[in-house]
Every structure is written in structure tokens, then in C-alpha cells.
Image 1 (cartoon, helix red, strand yellow):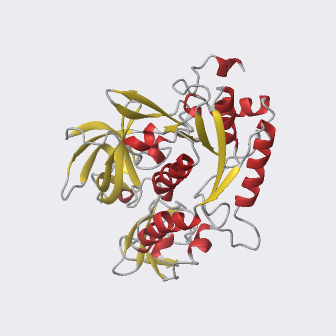
Image 2 (cartoon, one colour):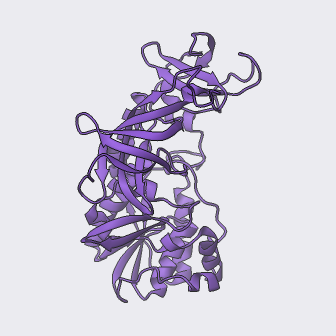
Length: 387
């Protein structure tokens, strides 16, 4: 394939014969990762990890189908597939924290913890006990070593860059991780898979939280979090509906509110703008650009810097408060009790506590922290759309 052949080799620092573990998920990205490692002459040892125990009679969790696809890929490449079950570790280190944050009213992102605690800790440790020196995954990101430290860089494909989800990795983890797809675009990955006859070359990408699959999120979460209905109200106190529990909603949410256009002036859609835990009330506003959906600043805890040390603060950089968001310029300052305060050059929409703010300097991902508090803009004059 001409476009791919013009790119630099995906694994230039690994000598032929180096034993590597490839995390096979059953998707096209990990399949091409194994293909590229094999073409580079590495000793490829595919591993399929199971992080969630299937317990649905309808088989909506796709682990079994994904395992079958991973086996088909290995058959095509002539590689032996091993499996490992990290369901207990996932529950203890990822899902339990996810539920705790939901109960507290936050909007957690378990994929960040899954990468740090499972894929690049448990999986890496397991792979090394089997003789692998490195772990290769299908993430769209890049690494580079400069100045005696490892740097995490964005993937070349801006629509697929996954450095946001990898920002919590440390120097030891990055030293043993490689991302062969970091220099490729998705269309090139699919073309490589088709050229090699990989059976998953046209398989759709998975979306959403890994352990939920295509299930209804609220119904799934209700298995562990009891329903605690309460009023849905406007900032002025007008009750416009009933919610099923604050844990089931996130800031900026539009779908599933059960309000429609029955209340308020005009047909503008409703959005979640806040949670009043004292009154067990969900606060909603009309219109995507309502001032109460915007924040000028946030505070973040559980701060992690990839370099292993904090940069000199205050730091002018860019940041994302959610995956696939455009970077926005900000100033990162020292906050109280080891926290950070992040001031944005322009107000940010629907910043959700529990999500992660991730910092960048150009192509390099610097690290990030978990969003704890935000400042909402006032209604009326002074809002982001005020004349």
C-alpha cells in the first residue's frame, strides 16, 4: 500500500526477534498491530484479555464474539493465541471506583483507569512473565524518547488520537509500551487489514464503555445503583419532570430527560446543567448555548504528569475536558492541597466533574487530572452569548 509504505517503520527501535505481547481485542486496530509486528520480524505473542464476566442470557456483551474474531486473525497470521482473565482485577481497580464516583454524582471515565491499571499494569506484568519484553496495542498514539524521558505524543489521525485516554501512564509503562498505529490514519489501517486478508478488516469500531457494549447504559447501571427519583427543575425552581436518580445523568446530557418541548418558551431542547444533591434535584436549561452550561475554570485532583515531575507553574498550554474535544488554550496554576486550577481563555461547554482534563504542549501530552469543581457562568448579561 503506497500511502503506508511512505511512512516511517512503526517499530524502528525494536530489533527483529524481540519478544512482544500484542493485546488482541478482536477488532481491526489490534489485528493490524499484530500484522505490523509480524512484518517487522518480531516474536509476536498475541494475548486476548477478558475484563468483564458475561452474565447476560442474550449475549449482549461481545467478549465471546471478539475472542472468536481474535482467533480468526491469529489463524490468518499463523500465530498462537493465549487468553487471560482480568475480570477480578478490573472490578477491584476500575469498576468499583466507577460506581463510587457515580454514587457521588460525578461522571467518571473508566477507560483512563483501565489503561493505567489493567492494560499497562496487569497485562504488562502478565506478558513479561511469559517472556515478552514489550506490550503492543492498537491505540492511536505515539511515543518518543528525548532528554532522558519518554514522551507521549498524539496519534497522526486527529479523528482517532487516543492520547487523552493514555495520559495517566508513567515512565516505566511508556518505556515498555509501543503503539504501531500511531503514525497511521484509520483508512490506512483498514486498507492494510484488507490487503493482508484479515477477517476483521471491515468490522465496525466499538464505542462506549468497554464492559457495557451495546447495552442501555441506564438499565445496566441500575443493577448496582438503586433508583432515587427526584424532581427535574429549572434554575428558577420550576419543576418540569422527574429523574430516576442523579447518578444516571451527566452535565450537557440532552437525550433521555423525558421533557421534550412541553415546558418553557419555544421548542429549544433541554440540557442537564447541574445537580442539586441536597434536594436530589436535576437542574436543566433550554438551549445548547445557555450560559449555565459554560465554565471559565475548573479545579483538578489526582494529578499525574507523564514526565514524572510537575512543570513550572503557572503553565500556558492547551487542554481537553473530554475525548475528541478541540484543544483550548488555558493557564494551569497551583491550587490548594495539591490540586490544580485551570483557567480557560474562553468559556468551556458542559465541563463535567469526574471526567479528566488533559494537557498538551503542541503534539505532546503532558498529563492531566480528574475534574473536581467548575465555575458556571451567570445567567443574563455577561454570559458567553451576551451582546
